[in-house]
Length: 269
Ligand SMILES: C[S@@+](CC[C@H](N)C(=O)[O-])C[C@H]1O[C@@H](n2cnc3c(N)ncnc32)[C@H](O)[C@@H]1O
Image (tube, rainbow, N blue to C red; front, top):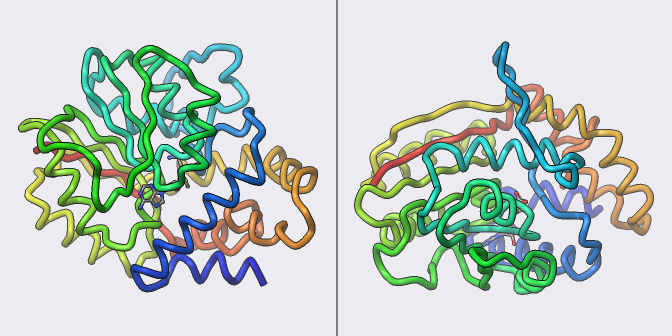
């Protein structure tokens, strides 16, 4: 039953979609408080030949594939000394990695779920890292205050992608960069491209990264299945398997058949 609800969530009307996703993430952050669950994305594996492996601190090795997705999105531009906003920072692991490794002057993570924000503040304390509750569609910031906005696998939850992109444009400084990655069903892609085209932002890079994400899902499958089996009550397992896109889930199969695509875009204001 919950599996069906998860799939259904991807296709709802804006208000219901926003409300139910918020409820889901509030629930997850409240139920699973373990600090070693740090990421909620599908991961990334570079597939070009001769790419040298990303060097990670020992404590980050377990989260390699999740971090590689962040690294891919966040290194679209040099973040050193910059004012960076991440919208949809989840449990905070990505913002903490970026703050620690890519050395922005100030890294701010916002998330709709205040439970996620509480977890993030508890687990990550760095001088250049800040978390606050906020909605992607009404960003709680003045105009033109950020050099870079990052958005990793969060925007499929928003009621209005159009409102989100307008808000990104508003809070970015002139010349600022918006680096985005997320999945969409294939029939949503044209509408998404139109939103981007009318955003007033200049598209400077676009990639389909479904194969990179599928490879990460494959490599992480055993550990994620084990986590779900060990840590979840029976009534939640089906929904979590879909949410995590484990092998044989509908979401995983839809990536394989290209019914769902994972995309990345970089824009300049
Ligand atoms: C799949 S998780 C990804 C989290 C994180 N980016 C990561 O990769 O680990 C999606 C996140 O987006 C957040 N989110 C959903 N709707 C939002 C909104 N309207 N405004 C801000 N955050 C939102 C959720 O609370 C959740 O933490």
